[in-house]
Amino acid sequence: MRYFVLFFGIVFLMSCGASLPEMTTMSLLTLEEEFTVIEEGMEYCGCPLKGLKEYSGKYKLSFKGVEMNLGALSFCDETKHMRRVYTKRQDSGVMYYIYQYGTCNGDDIHAFGFDKKTKEIFQYEFFWTPDNIQKTLLCSDFDFDEDGDLVSRFYNNMEGKDYTRKWEIDEKGRQIKYLGDKD
Image (cartoon, rainbow, N blue to C red; front, side, top):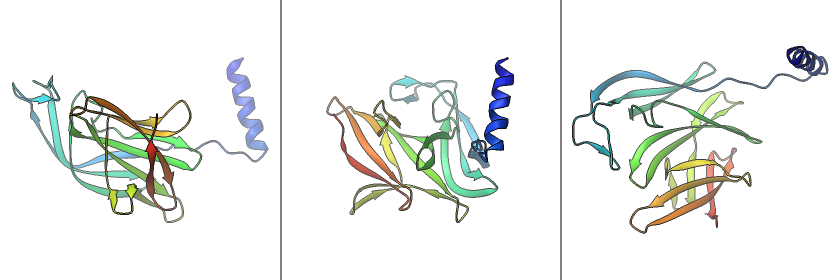
């Protein structure tokens, strides 16, 4: 019965001129890659990685037949960095991002979008001030919080303090703008 109602609802919406939401995702593709098995003594912020594989090479993003060369990146098994493209949907569009190992304080986030007019993949810049614009953001978490705000979180090991920073996506300017620390 549920499937019939769902099917009927979709047919009804489509007959009213509505369309199904786009479910296409961005893919990370390998151009060339090699891996090494991590030896005894190597650690990832205090977490032993012995026996896991670390991959490094050249990669590209692919979306709707359009590609963007990312150059050299590296990934490690059994971490959130393992060749995965994350997706965040919001009113202004869709943002895609990948994690790269940064420091023990957090990871480097690379954020991307897709321009429907020009049909190109672009990389967002993280805008702190006019004099401080970066291609990546160091954080341990990048998500929407319970208030619907886009926030980044990271722990500063030197200070022993957590930070939560609020951001705004400027789709037109292709920037993610820093709005301040969030309490």
